[in-house]
Image (cartoon, rainbow, N blue to C red; front, side, top):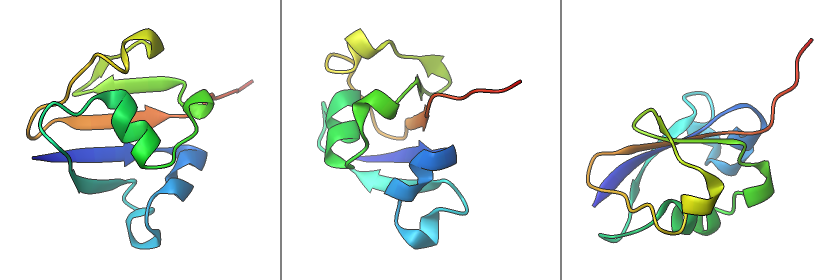
Length: 84
């Protein structure tokens, strides 16, 4: 099944070079794939995943390995951010 995988800020470095400007790629994943599986398979350091959303809804780190994805969903991830 196909999902959209979005990485922002410094995490975009984990996308193929041609996808970094758009911050997204379409991924083929197995049915029943979890958020945690996608994070690990794409080589994104879990400690750098501060904000994780599936179709705009926040997913707590404790739920990454139980939250399954379905066809057409978007998984978006931001690193820790600081401002001032």
